[in-house]
Length: 71
Image (cartoon, rainbow, N blue to C red; front, side, top):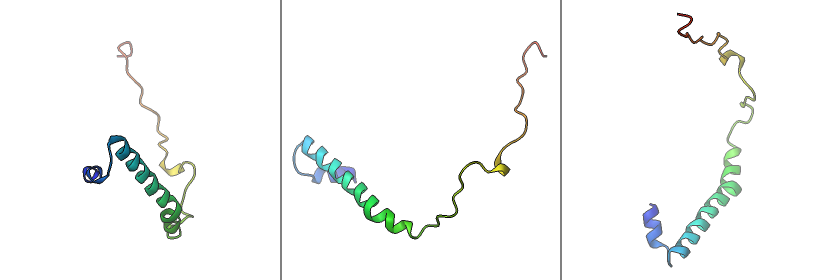
């Protein structure tokens, strides 16, 4: 896909690079201005958890390394 886009952009290497960067910037802008706000109305906002979940924390003692002096 990128090779096809690169071949079809007019101009030299600098012009193609500038056009590809501009196209990428345009896609990002369209996503942030129209796509993400439209999709955010469909997503649930109350399901987020901030912090740690107490039931997921491993409360066991960490394993102790055995050295030659202990053996």
